[in-house]
Amino acid sequence: MNDLLIVKDQVRYEQKAYWRNPMAAVFTLMFPVVFLVVVGTSAGATRVPGTTLKYDQYIVVAMLTFGLIAACYTNLGMAICIRRESGVLKRMRGTPIAISSYVDGIIGSVLINVAVLTVVVVGIGMSFYHLHFPYHPLATVVTLLVAIVTFCALGMAVTIIVPNADAAPAVINGIYFPIVFISGVFYPLSSGSVLSHIAAYFPISHMITALVSGFEQDPGSGLRPRDLMVMLIWAAAALVFTARRFRWEPKHR
Image (cartoon, rainbow, N blue to C red; front, side, top):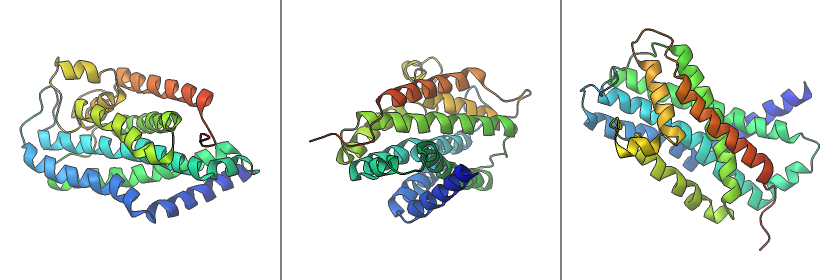
């Protein structure tokens, strides 16, 4: 019970810190919305090959992916790097609070941010791009939860290779943006193309495919086991890497 209260308090603290940091909120919420309006408006209403969605509807799903990764991977990774550099992580490790409760509080805050982002982006898609409410809501929720686990794990893992807080934006975004561009976030990937084969090794394109399936009017459950499995493999690898190499203190200069 005490651990749950600690997690609750940590979530509340993380939410206050998040909304008091305009840059973090803008990057997570406003960037996907701005990209959605700009790209979605110019995307047209023709159907995306291999799906039942139109291009502008596909962009809604893709921007939800973009925002989720920003919340779970980018923001989480940068926050950990900054706290490690400032000594917060070291001090937290020396308190009676369980590290698991501290981390759970951070992840709980991320869940709230993703929920808000989902409502905003899907709401815009339904209001202006004729996107239907997910035909497979369970599949959509499962995909989002698996994606949150995957990209939070990757956000923790990437901090291991970041030498200091000053280098965090360059390292984290330097890994993130090239993969985003080749994974079909800003445009659908052509099946069988070189980029689609490269993107298949990374979790982003699999998240988009699984999420698109939840919004398609097709018989069946809408679940994409293969795509979910690829994301979970990345999550497991990231968690193992983090458990073995995570640093609570900054590197000595």
